[in-house]
Image (cartoon, rainbow, N blue to C red; front, top):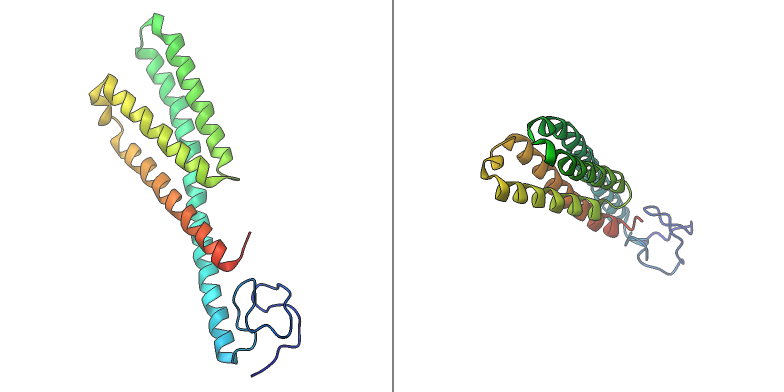
Length: 173
């Protein structure tokens, strides 16, 4: 067995003592065979590649929150033309609140993606349910966009949970 001469792990660069068999930070076999060490590093590299693809899915899901905000703003313009004059101010206020909420969740998704995506999906589903209660035909209006948005948000939530799990395995903050 080869005893490492440096005092930092080759995988995560955490300090270790010469008597350690494995790195306390990542589990790297400090006194393992070169094949064991190479295998560990290759597995770690695969996980890091997986993590980068998960982070991309999380980014896309966060962007879908911005899309929802934009669609809310655009659709409010069309809705205002079809609503009775006495209801316009309440519809406008509700749409502005929703626009600001989804825009805020989009920005929050950059720092706290789990909370933002779960909140965004919940808010979006609640809006769709309330619209369906008010007018059941709204379920089918824009169904393709609704399915795509819900799909991105669910995929993003799954990706952020998987990414958090991988970060713990890789000992990444």
